[in-house]
Image (tube, rainbow, N blue to C red; front, side, top):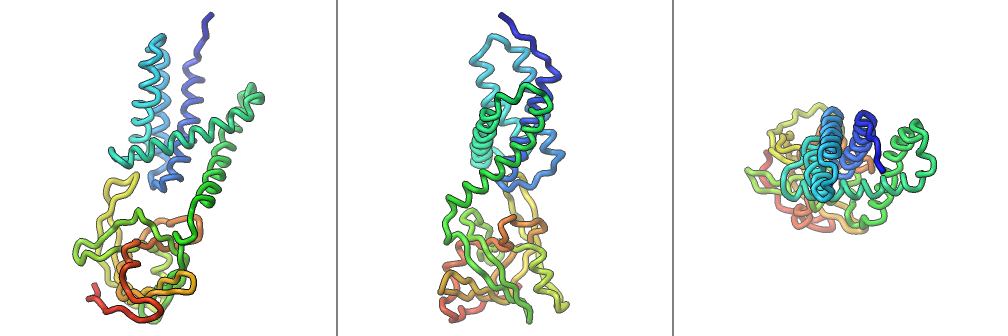
Length: 276
């Protein structure tokens, strides 16, 4: 018994599936790479899969190692520009979570996959289904105290927004050593609507998918952090300005959790620090 392998079809199927997986992982880890980079990573994974499948026939264990260890790692590195270490491990885990969800969807609709056009249609629909499942899982596992309300003040302007208290945000100012929060540019535009000159400098940062980048850093006049019936004032907090939208979940501010240990509760102002 033997099988005929059409390499061109095999490549296209793997290329499409790898593209979908990388797009899903990109959403999961909030990576900011371009779609061109995603396609390059998918093409790399699909091409190497074809080489291993055709060139190492009969070497099952070696194929297994290359498929599930080497090729997926190279695909993540190329497509998402993930760094070695914990970030790569996180991306690798999310890749298999996405694969598990995608495989489950295809298993349900397996009887209908004999028609090629239905396969490609299902592949596209599966991308949106997995995204929906992932958002539901996040909502079920995320605790309420991960969020709070904040009021930001700069001059005579103020802005209120939902904020995420992100334990993964360890950004600190190299000059003052203070924790740095992240806000969207749209927030800054509203805070400077009166035309007040904005003084800023730049801060270095790194994240998954971006080895090193810079963001403008400003010092606000004050911030009010509201959690239920309690609130806390922070004088002259630092905020890095993100050019990209922080989330699709209606928060425009990411708080550094270390800032919660500063300030005074219930409206008593903390001692001021020297502005930038």
